[in-house]
Length: 356
Ligand code: SAM
Image (tube, rainbow, N blue to C red; front, side, top):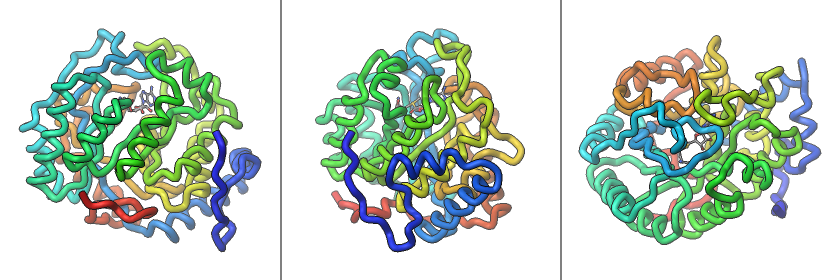
């Protein structure tokens, strides 16, 4: 992967080379606290104090892939498979406007079929016609013409993590696709004028600090509009169920990674992802993430009855709550942190958003 040079900003706070990122990742004690403070200051300066809320609706757990880490992989027979009806998603979408969630993120497993692709396109059209929400899709690697069709339907953004920048490690944990194919999808989405989100899991077994540094810099090279990263959490019903997170002995490394990510990607939207709450409970990981570089929160807006069947990893938070409860909870959490909600769609800060 060739790193495109990015001009150093005036304040010299940006990390842009592997050795700079590695130095940040090695920070301990007071140096680590200083790194967190630096990331928080840069977030405040570039993205402001207001937090964008993007409600996630896990509309289907049907998946044809067998990723070695994922709780909804096709080989996991211990869950009930479901797919929400379009009317049910529309009902949630209409409520989200009142919950101050300017974006709906529609996420599912990867179960590609022409009929399913058309159904999802029609749903995007309905959401854009009947609400003011921005629409993000997160449904995996798809043929580029399918992305083009969804774009025509009104899709604003797409989330597809590259998971790890190491091609060999990627191949070991993804029997169904290569890193090159996934990066190709991200380039195709960018060419369509879609706002592109990607990211990685932190601490996949076999990840070295060098790989982590390159993950962070690949986000920079891809010039991503949004970057979601979160701890790898072993799921017992998967082949990696017995493995440990690479930072099991030093869990705060997950925040070090997040802070370094902000310092290398000053203008990207960075969510405090759900998995941080599964690993850190007191104080909750997502609250800490918002104080160490993140500026976006993704409340779970999936109807309660489906949540236990979308357990990507154990201890996923909020499985016994409803979308309304999560919506209320997050506003309270932000108040406690002295942060406000940004009511707008929270589009990319990096480039003009192309109207359709
Ligand atoms: N199928 C789509 C895809 O792969 O992009 C979207 C759904 S996928 C379940 C969403 C994300 O869940 C993945 O990008 C992955 O990073 C995360 N995930 C899955 N299993 C995980 C685990 N055991 N620990 C942490 N994150 C996990």
